Amino acid sequence: MISDHHDPHLFPVAIIDPLPAYAVGLVSAFAEAGFSAECPTDPPRWTERHDRSAVVITMDPPCDEELLQRLVKSDPELWITVLVTHPRLSGLRHFWGMGVHSVVDRMTRPQVIVRTVELTMASHAVVPMAIFESIAEKLLKASDIDLSEQHVAWLEALGRGARISDIAQASGYSIREMHRLLGQLYRTLGVSGRFEAIALAARSGII
Image 1 (cartoon, rainbow, N blue to C red):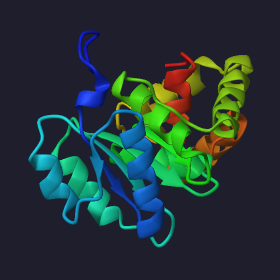
Image 2: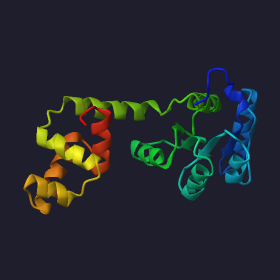
Image 3: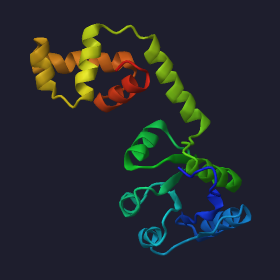
């Protein structure tokens, strides 16, 4: 996070997009807002040359996830905004797991992308409204679910990284039956698997 007495426009911004004309347009938008922005030929090396910087990178398929991983590794404090055409919640979870802070629809106005980077520098995570509504809906549903103490205990065990076999043994079920019961719990929570269940339970205060 940048402190209150630091101007976010002092930090350089790298634009990474497969279409040169689009990238140059974004550079112009950031320049008009007072940023120093460019399209580096070697983004990881570019980030290593700066104490703090931000990156705006397009991750439409086929995207270069290896480059994104290299960027995160080159500077763990790098502010990362991903551009995706028609972003989805499933993709957002994936990008968050890779160290991305904000996700914006690539089709949005350049000025919105600039503002997103400014907010990201101020420790705000920016996502499209449709995705926010989807997350909020899941959280509200989770808060209304009446889970048993055993269900909560299972979620807590999953959150600690326990193996399904260990949970089954502690609960007195076979491994096969435990998988079936956890599948029912996931469906009740409206999630597709273990990691989504843990994240949802943590965010909604269940665990």
